Length: 573
Image 1 (tube, rainbow, N blue to C red):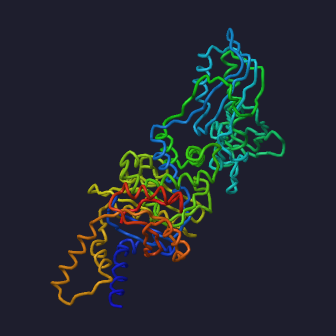
Image 2: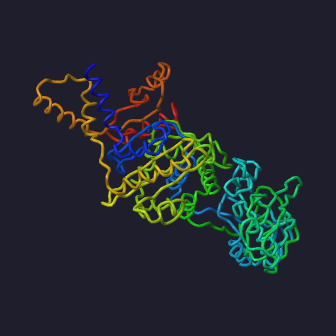
């Protein structure tokens, strides 16, 4: 009993919060049960500084984006580029293409109006001056339905609600330009997929308040959606861009492409058709996006939901084959992260990959494990893809003019009753920490952000002291041994156990469970002739091994994935 008591006290000691953080939480007025904190020295073997509800399942909001962006780096590399392929059918003679121009989208989320100039130059370089056929678009790489908006909240036409499509263009956003001074209303890009009705009244009033922005109504009752501009606007106002998620991106791309071709003297006699590229089509050229490194940086820094959805779906197609689906993508992210030892234990529901979800779930410890893995592999290069405190992205203003500026690289996540932040912090002495602070509370919006800011400032100022983990591990190692009365003899025994603890073995972690695994489950492992152990901390872990060599463990891992659990991974103990 005494041994158990000592063990429990030691466990509490290991995971106790520093007094300063306890004070900050008390001052915030947020209940501890609504907060998860996990702070440790960055990288493998880093000592824990603070832990609170680290294994409790939370709603992640946009911090979950880092799982997909990191999985994409692991699978594809920083230099990967999306493709948009152009084909033709028929014959080309004297500048006349007697056949169709075909385009296959592979989900490039960044393709926009500015890319058209280069695309047209490539078409001209092929010698095409007239197209006697249709423009055919193949958007079959993603299987995601036809919804324009996720409809997640009361703002369905806002850009953050845009749904993915393999033939994306302008992030599915249409832009109506309003210039009150010129009494002008027009479409930014040629796009026959929607209409504008202008009912604005110009008034000679100062450009502020109710007169500073046009009233906007969207009508989707007809086949062709309509943007209705109404109300009064000051004629002294400058240009206003009304941006809405309204129509199909492949339609917008078709109209913009056809208009750009026309401006270059290239006529198209046919219409828009949707179908797969035939096997006998001739490839003309491939248009490439920016590097994955740039795109995941914008995804994380700006918390771009559409980019995150496309990265997520791309992984589903790359791992399990096209067409990409949500389930393929969920499985792909878990498979990639698990195979690289980047996924901790606990509930993980990724849902759509962007965090615009109440279904998505994870815990602070799991997220920190992934961040540590990324730090170990890519260091500063990976860190720089996140928002830099006081410099860019979602924490540019949040930490501007504070001690945290240029000392934190973070991903934020915000929903109603959710305020989360995760990433890395460097203190004044140059020491780096992996930091996850998740607040799921009715008080999250303002008080949660303030609490996170104060904890990060405290960390930067160098007040953090690592928990004495080595002493705690020592007690755990001795919990089933006799405690000797002689202090001197006890010290010798402790040193002996410390030496044993340094020897590292490899296991295949088959799974983790809240309840003890059934006999039927463990019999499956026994039938395969594999040695196993069930370890219990907060949860039950089923481990196959131990193995002295990682290569041996990896051979067993292949067998375990085939026979038991495809999400199994290598674990060091």
